[in-house]
Figure 1: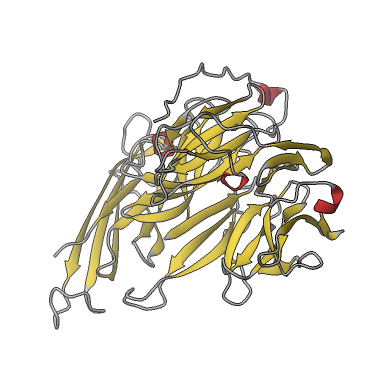
Figure 2 (figure 1 turned 60 degrees about the vertical axis):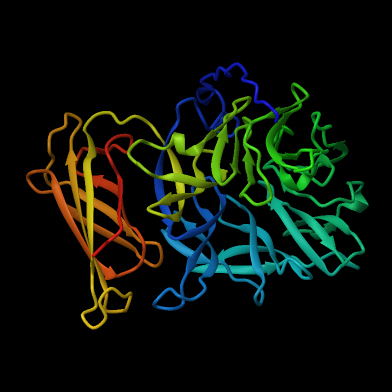
Amino acid sequence: MPEVQAVPAFQRAACLALLSAAVCPAWAAGTVLAIDLVDSPGTAAHAINARGDVAGSFAEWPCDDHQCVPVTHTAVWSTRDRSRLILPTLGSLTIVPATLDAVGRVTGTVTDFATTSHAVVWDRVGAGYQLHDLGTLPGFTNAAAAGADASGRVVGHASAGGSGWRPFVWTDATGMVDLGAAGFPLERPAAISPAGWVVSDDHTWSLDDAASVQPLPAPPAGFYPPAGAALRINDRRELAGFLVTTSGQQLVYLHRWRPANGQWQLLSNSPTGHLSSWRIASISRDATVLATVTGNGVIAEGPDGLAQPLQARLSPAYPGVSVANAGPANERGAVAALAVMGSAKRLVRLEPIEACSGDCLQVSDLSMRGKFVDDPDDPGQCTPKARNKVHASVEVVDALGQPRAGVKVRARLLDEYDLNETVSGRTDAAGRLELRHEGPACVGAVTLLVESLRADGSHFDRGKGQLTASVIPLP
């Protein structure tokens, strides 16, 4: 098995004082993450933009007893107006988002994964999104989009059954243009960086210069040549993704390529097989890599840090929470992800936080208890008349540990299906708030997530205390 080699830590300069956020590392050693709930239950974290809008997927059950197959929707959650906007599709085709730009435009593909695919963009129009089919190149029947750069140029490929494919670029002004005719490789683009660097099946290149085409770097010993579909690229032509071993098991390992040293760096010793979850999410300008390895979200800080569980970066105020899938990060270091709270996955935004100073408030104690209340006509069964009764107790203190009265607490109640309810109240003279909930039974664990504490002149400390708790109501 390959062995991860430790490397000296990179010494970051305080470049934010001199340069722009776009060229400075978004992550610093010791960064602590807090949880902003986006939606629940979540099924995928696809993209995040600079202002924190998230493109992802969530599930809902069209039947009251949850015994039916859930329906998955793909949507954008806007921070501008706190809305959830479901993306339309064509017929019953599945939506595969690739990028989400600064103004909320989504680029991606709608497909049946077999015979039909359309490259599309979704633009926000009023209170919703409108789908725009980008068409395809002459002589081809299908198209798929790999993503868009910061100037709105969409790259992808057109295809026609088994007759091959052609790369394209699309803009609002030019429509779809054949990149093969301009001298670029006749390959499928897999990803594009904000500045227009592309990784395709077997090459990297700048969308501005056909002479920039270079083959993908040779693999390290024991691995097959890299495949562009399993890689991401940044503005410095650095790569991150998974390489496949030449052994019989053909396991995949997370790697990073930096032209500066001309070497593939093994980021994780954890082998990932075809039966476990793995995904490359992003590589930032400072070469920080986000990925999912064996069903766990990981981060490898740039330029040469090794993969570490994202869970280890969560504030200790979120006990028992794990990160099941890592999506990409934005320029501020916020990560779109799926976090497991209770026993269900939630679509979240993981936000870097700083140590609280001044008049800081924290939840010093959070406890829950729950009871299953029988249907009197059918005891012990999950009928519509059976109920859950849940009680949560929240204690708020100041930085000195003294109880704080009059603090407005806002929290979210969640179960494994439909429950996503905001609850709030003010603490009493002892700094305590009691919250009660009654709802359908047999919905798994019920979780409380404290989202904010508000009092004049005070700050919410998400780096200490306890902000999550769960209970499974029992008879």
